[in-house]
Image (cartoon, rainbow, N blue to C red; front, side, top):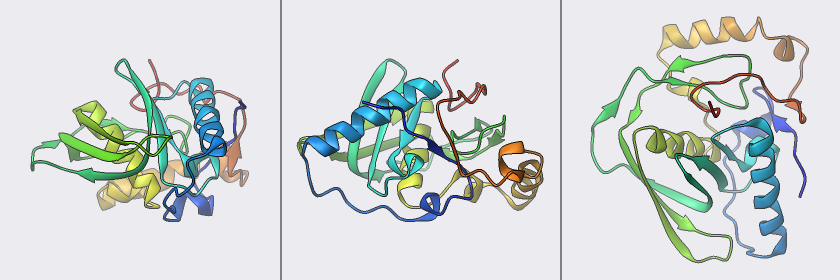
Length: 186
């Protein structure tokens, strides 16, 4: 197992729709282990494969006493109830960049585990937010895409103040991102 560099905003892999996982082998299990180790190192709540430069439909999580992974997720949003006003952040946008992001209150992700066995991941509130955030990554979307125009403009202005962004960095390795908040463990 090894900690992988986290890809940052501006890296094209974060804007590319990921491919379905088709091989359920030791390489996949090693990838999942690396993702968990990277997540632990960053003290995050969840991380998707493209965030470590891998274009496969997979994410791992460690949130609300639940730790695991989901391969090839398909998300269902069972009702229209929204959760609004929650500040959302991302390991790929470090530096305290948190913005209110509207998401559905409940989500159910169905997919498979590392062995190809069907599994279901239901969530409500913050856990549902995580499911939606991570599956957005697998479709090449970031939470910045869900912001209203004024918030998006504010976020883009904040980006210009980030040392990692102005230096043209597209990944960070092993240095914890010192941010704490919605997508980081408290």
